Image 1 (cartoon, rainbow, N blue to C red):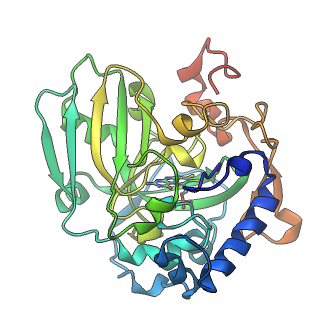
Image 2: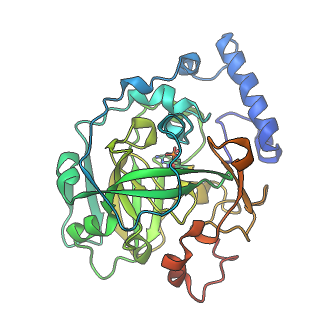
Length: 323
Ligand code: MTE
């Protein structure tokens, strides 16, 4: 993603991804040597990943007919150590090291906007609202890497029914948790926090869209968006907001973090589309995380392979304009 660090000259906008990463590595080295001006928390980056600290709460799940057949899940290790969760740092390995700071209890999700009545759901109520299904889905990031993840959750539509939206609700916005004490990294990144994402109502109500509480049959590790996130398998991963605390039903297309930060790079729809390149790289292929080298590059599928189920949502729309 296009990361603008606070107080950083805007050259990141014109730097190739690999150069930019090297520069970040240099900056981290400088921070470790105590000569950088970034927040002191950056020194925590040198700590080893702490995937061990997340209590592996088991979830009772039933296999789902909507699971994607014929695909092998990525290892738990890769799914939980190669993440994007910028509240906990910008490197893929940062969330696994830092997200232990996130306190996921007590936790509530408040519902507001175009609804019959404002409501607040406790996470433990949400967990029991519907039977938990296991859905194996392709997971494609806009940065052209992919995984296969066995998520545990239930259709977002089931939750939306409980929210009793009014007919005036055209879109739904998801807002993530924002807490400077637990997520001090947000100070370094120039994004309009809290992380915000949104879907059109018909996308949100689609049976494939999952309100997600776990993966591999256990509660979500913090770095994967504990205690609750959204998963929309035909869209680039950034549409799937993590650690949600607020759901707003709105009349107009809501602000969404990446679209607001770089509208020419990240569209509101962000359906996986190998025919529409990102301005700085192709979307035709993806790097498969954890795959042996002979399977490490594969062609990206339209709508991430879910076209039969979702293409009708976009009938008549120009997907180049509405990227
Ligand atoms: N949600 C929040 N709150 N903060 C984030 O930085 N990153 C997004 C999305 N949800 C992000 C987020 C991006 S860019 C991607 S690709 C996916 O989460 C990554 O999900 P994963 O780490 O489980 O693979």
